[in-house]
Length: 208
Image (cartoon, rainbow, N blue to C red; front, side, top):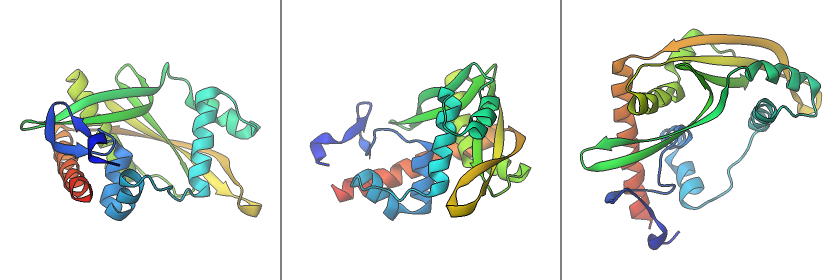
């Protein structure tokens, strides 16, 4: 990507991001592996997609569209479509001095101050894992900026299992974990967003 194609944040040129915004997936990838982040977002390289990731996308599509060639997946996915607002898009700006950092979220469900996030996988979710999950903390920042209010969250886990020939399917086990976030959670994640944005911006400008 050439310099003239760089996306700036508002009218500020101090912070530069390859997509012009931060998402939770970007923050998570950068913190886990700056090298893989550079490959994906700076250079546009294809990322390795696991069979678990492919299944997660298949389940999400079934939930969103009500269509799937697997009747069991479709039946269970219907239980995740009770909320009016599915795949709810949020956009807002985190401010750091004179800098503005746009952030983007896609909520699995949102209704009456309750935000839901659906997860598939064979590793069991626990209340602690749900409480510690950064994605919910990220959503909490966006919602507080936009509404000025605290929200309640939940993570709903759909257990999977791997059968013969590496085929992944749902077991039918579903567990829900309620999550609440405090003002301290909001402040800590806001600081984390700013830190990551500045690190990415510095690396991006050095690269190009």
